[in-house]
Length: 324
Image (cartoon, rainbow, N blue to C red):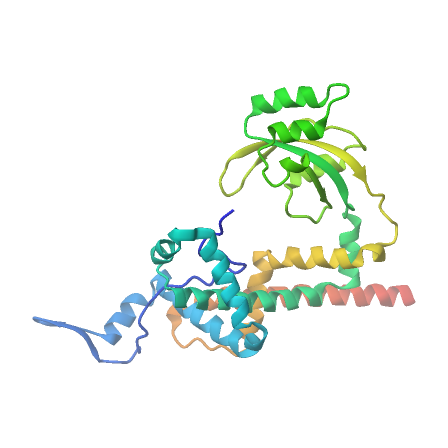
């Protein structure tokens, strides 16, 4: 699937080209008969524009994160990400860049900014991957299963294939090769392995698989894509299920991977990390027009801090009670 040109872990870093203007500058930008537009006039007009505010936000975040995390993102990483997207879009890449108001250089800047924030978010998520949080995650964790899936675009076709799949002696793998529209699995008979933290299989499909006994075949599982709003129909057969150990430490590495991955795509968590970094950098907003723009991040940081303090206090109280 091709990536959206503006896509990244941090969607708040949109790039819009805008000339920087001094609030108090009386330098003329445009003159005409009977009127003049100065830099100050222009600034006062555009500063409440949503796109202009995004530019200031982007500039601030870039400077803060570059100063603290710049050494952790290499030009090689940026270029590799750039080339990957260029390859995905092929001959249309230049056109897509232009439509997004980007040049090759500004897109590389956007990629770098995204990666700086991604790095900070990952570091923050790993700090929160405490034993207590991993134990909590373990309670709902289901270990790896091996299943075969058939993906279909028509409900009528799905009903037809399901009848064949549930017939005595049915060759499910052969049915997947013949009928599945999932190009990544059909040639392998639809075989796929996943646990509850996997992201390459729809949640509804995972739930259906976990509920089946070995060699069981599901009913039709309907999945609607949240981005394209297209509906697909899945049939699942489980060929192997892993028994779950009672010891959460047996899965500690995997639980940490899942925990961090969930935080990395959580918009509220990302916002709280950005807010914490802006607060640490002692950001002072001098123009009231931009107060609310930055307040959303400082509020997120304060909320996250309060939650952490409450959790720590609760844990301390529990420990104290246990000691008594």
